[in-house]
Length: 46
Image (cartoon, rainbow, N blue to C red; front, side, top):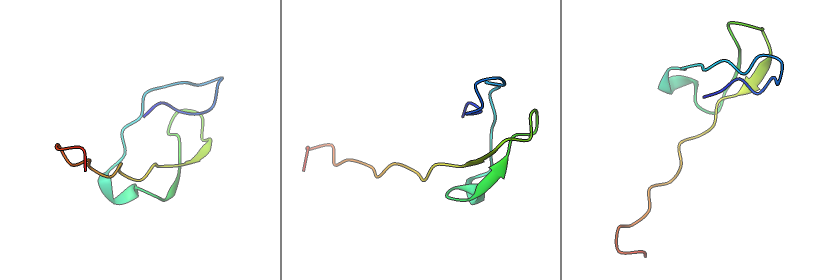
């Protein structure tokens, strides 16, 4: 992920158990929500 704070913009990694939770950037301390995983699409397009 990339920090959503435009003044920071650092690349951040978060553990999978953080998905959907609000965390803080370790560089600028800005709070943001870690996105949920995208639903996987059926390879047949269904």
